[in-house]
Amino acid sequence: GQQVMQIPQYQHVQEGEDFTTYCNSSTTLSNIQWYKQRPGGHPVFLIQLVKSGEVKKQKRLTFQFGEAKKNSSLHITATQTTDVGTYFCAGLMDSNYQLIWGAGTKLIIKP
Amino acid sequence: NAGVMQNPRHLVRRRGQEARLRCSPMKGHSHVYWYRQLPEEGLKFMVYLQKENIIDESGMPKERFSAEFPKEGPSILRIQQVVRGDSAAYFCASSPPPDYGGEQYFGPGTRLTVT
Image 1 (cartoon, rainbow over the protein chains, first blue to last red):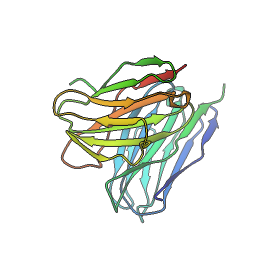
Image 2 (image 1 turned 180 degrees about the vertical axis):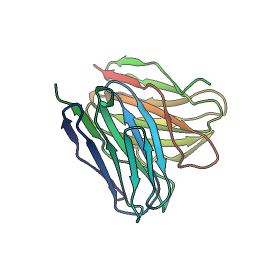
Image 3 (image 1 turned 120 degrees about the horizontal axis):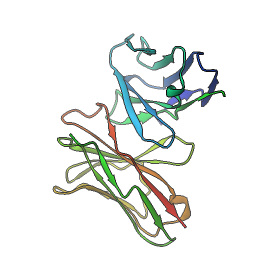
Image 4 (image 1 turned 120 degrees about the vertical axis):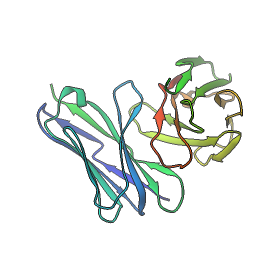
């Protein structure tokens, strides 16, 4: 079936280091969305990418959508404790209306 | 504009009882989605509804689970004869018309514990 693979499952970083999570789809996406879920909280929408090759920035967060609209990445520069949580991508399949969710990448700041 | 509301926030049920989870979407939103999340796991899509219509229930177990979104009132996710494996966080999300595929706004979730 249609899948969105997200890696890594976990990433441990020292505060101040960078963090990246990647999503890959088996099929072309109409759009891709990114969400953040803090521990014990609910997912919160961060951004939506629609165009091939699109890059969007939100302060220290950079979101990219691949040229073929099958992959995407989220990069956080100089992580802070407030960045802790799980980051999910969700891709809207070109072929139907279903939003397919990645499994999430958990960002953990090493003490 | 109030966000997506879910109640109850926590629900404890004994095996065999029924669980009813309620979701009121954001004002003006006509699309509702239900998700299940086990501890330390991702979101599992269950069902997508519009007012009085189930659009996609491909993620919902065929037995014991049902969902509705009536013309008036909240969306309801109903689990009959709960079992321990139903223990999870259930999130509802809503999105505005007209186009599916826009961002979803999540409620705080209902944490269901089956004892």
